[in-house]
Image (cartoon, rainbow, N blue to C red):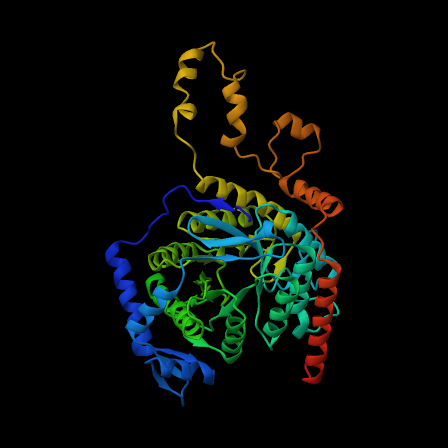
Length: 482
């Protein structure tokens, strides 16, 4: 099982007890009075059978508070996931922090910063890079790329999944669109692994038919779920952080109720992907301060509900290049998410929003993730680490700790040594070519591609995956989607 990072520091709270209660009461009021639209007959019938007020003409379901509370009690506070290699198994929840690779539409050119579709070779290489990084524990459903050269749009999710399972032992998410979830269930069975099903809300307050259909298929298969709310403050959600917390929490809990009614005890991780709308441009404000404040408060609410937490915003920067802006946005938002109790953080590889990705960014993000992970693990305070006897032995100047056994034992655990940062002296840096972190990251990426060999998928299982892809192609061809 992958260890991830273990949070030893107390999770940060931003809300008072009174504020938490007020937001909870407001959420229950929205669920009971406003309700949500579910464009799926089976979902509406399920709600009606369990005491919800359902208007089948408008597809609206209103949920009584007691049902929401009951379904919260049925939701486990943690759950295990089986990878195709047991060394990559995960236990989601508690004080564990894991990182997931990012997702984007296209690959970005590091010299021109232009975006273009990725080749299948570049898809596989990106998955190899993510497999090699010890701070990456999961792979996203629509990742790394969803615009692939020569691949019809309807097949890209499945091509991503196939590349994940062939080039990494790490657990992958399962997307549901145009029936792709059916084939992901078959792939999971073929490789003998779990997948984390994706259930996305269409803000405001709506679950589309495709999302509901995929949810039932994957719930029947026994998948745990990642439910994500992605309101845009001022656009598809209230402009205030408090108001958007109510809509996003209501959206998450409505999906939770659906899943617990469909299969009681389903493992769920609640995902926040809420950010402000840029009122000047109409574009999302990725990695904005507002999104971090929302994430911190959302995490506190989900900790109160004892639901594992997924932070989606940290991996989505507004920067268009790998630069100072990218670094501070990603670093600060990742730290805020980790300190407030996130169990999974999306980070590695996405450059701008969900539009561009590059493995070099993932290599740089490996240092951010390990820095943040090391921070939340804190440090030990005991007789040996306090070192009072050693301090007495060394005394004042000219005493030194450099030649002590205590220093040799402890320095590596007390310091963080990034793999791509430039940490030489100024004179050495000038003498050796004035390399930057970006240069080191490029070099490390090339080294990984030369030397890292993922655990191969056994031939018989590899062939099964290929047959499932061919079955999907035939299915979409007959449906007129290819």
